[in-house]
Length: 132
Image (cartoon, rainbow, N blue to C red):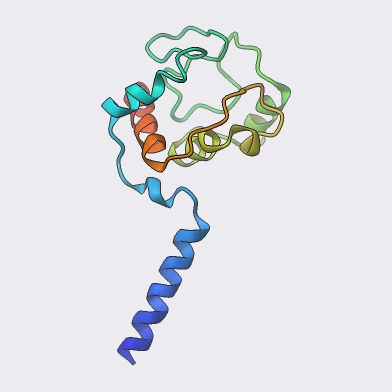
């Protein structure tokens, strides 16, 4: 009986993890390593000032409704995503940064995405550091 229960528990746990692409991000990232990853973003975004560039400022991104940073001209898709309830947190940022065009179809962001879970966790830790 114990073996059957353990097998069922393992199977259910594995299924839940495989259905959740951000499950691997449950680990805390390294903000210092995230600063290095963020260099790819710095062409279009700033994080230490509330100033827009080609992309909106990412200072204070955590908890912000998508498409709402003042004085930035977002795509209609991003504005609609925000109106539809998209708020930036660890999970939504992980989905978006993995594949921006899949998460928000019609986004203006041309970045192809971060494919490595470790890079995602690290850059999100870095973004969190600048959202306090």
